[in-house]
Each structure stands twice: as C-alpha cells, then as structure tokens.
Length: 221
Image (cartoon, rainbow, N blue to C red; front, side, top):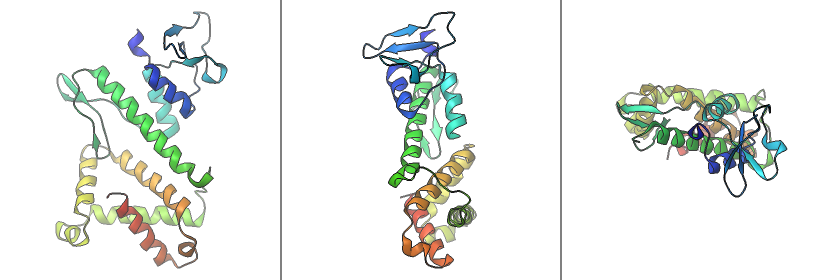
C-alpha cells in the first residue's frame, strides 16, 4: 500500500508548491517515516501540520496538477514490459516498471509547475490581465506564428530557419501532445506580457508582432 503514496522528497516539493488537499498519511519531518492518520479521521492538510508533511496518493496529485495547472502527463507504454514519459518535445528514459515511470511523471509535473509559477510571479506580477488588449494581442500573434510555422513547406522552413521548430511541433502533434503545445504557448504569452519593453508597448502593432515573433523563435533555441 505504501507505493500508492508519493515519496517524501516529492511530498515536500508539493507542499512548497502549495498542495493542501486532505491526505490520509503523513511523513515525519525530518525522519521521513510514513505514518497513517487515524481511521476515523477525515484526513490532514499541510496547512494544519508543523512537524509533519502530508503524504498524498499519486492519483490525488495527478488530479491536482490537472485542475490547478492544466497539466496532463501519464506513463506511456514503450513495449509490453517497459514504460516512458513524454511532454512536448521532452521524453524520459525508458523504465522497466510502471512505478519508475510514474515517479518520473510526478517529478516532471513538479518541474512544470515550478516553471509556471516562476513565470507568473516574474517581476512581482502576481496576475495576468488576460482581458487586456496587449495580452490578447500577444496571444493572437503567437497563435498566428504557430500556425504559420506548422503549415510551412520544407523550403520555407529552411529559408526562415524554423525547420527544427516545425519538426518539433509535428512530433508533438503526432504524439498527441496538442495540450502541451498550447500550454507552452500560454506560458510564453505570460512571460512576454510580463517583460515586454515599454517602447514596444508604445509602438505600433507591427513592432509588437516583430517582438513576439523574436521571442517565439528564441524559446525554441
């Protein structure tokens, strides 16, 4: 039954990310022993613990990442007896057990969440005004750039230096990772929104497009 609970280090990372769901076990800190809560208890949360860390179930954590970060990653079969994990153009090594792939999946989700938090909290800006003209313009331009590159022919891609991006996007789409592509685009839109220079904001739309296009290309270097 213990293998159903995420390990200590990952539970600690989840606490630091703000995971605060009801759990039915805890880790003693720093002894790292797994301790079940009383059978008649409704569970415990990190916000109510001092010397302990909530120990969630894998399925509970995967649901939390889906709901909070819109991140959908699961172990995938490589052969009948091996497993791997992929997200976007990233792929893990091949594992001999599902449990190893499941742990790799969890660590990748933690990495994604930390990256998203770093972007959102960049320069102390806690929120993104998605209804603002500039954010909608950035998102619109990014969608157009993505569409243009996906539908470029080989000669156009080679001439514009985007062959590697086109191939990466094609691979992601083939692997059924459309959500990962869109998630990456949204993170990039937030990053651009939080860092766009004043002179670009005060310029015309063409200047903004050029800046967004440059940032998109840079994100694939």
